[in-house]
Image (cartoon, rainbow, N blue to C red; front, side, top):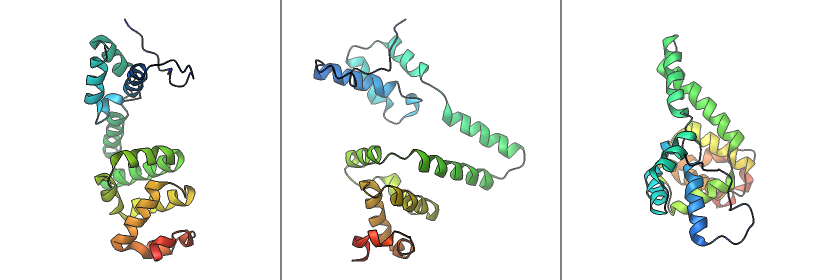
Length: 182
């Protein structure tokens, strides 16, 4: 059985890696992420891995060793909460509150900007997110913490253009959003 290490030659500073080796390692790292099998682009990564000489057993090992099943676990917990009498709306609120907290604690502006820049245009999910007052409040909280984040600054601009400039004006840091009010 082939073992795939999650330690990357990318971070070793070796400097002797060819572009092909770096690409293979990048694909291997992508597939070794927790629950990578649940990610939307997994089929592309799987094809790349196999095209670069990886074997089906190695691929299966990579994906299965790193599978934790967080999404199905959340669904199970939601079912349990409803079994003990919580309504769907209450479960939804509990999940949203927890998700907000996790995002506030783990948000990485560099990763967010990388995803945003790679997308090229305003992602559909962002537009949907900005339609909801709860999620706009999260954007405001994040933008106060991460003032130089391109994704968050873009989001503030979109929120303003959508007519919610009064929400932005109520923020303690409203003066930092000069472009919104000019």
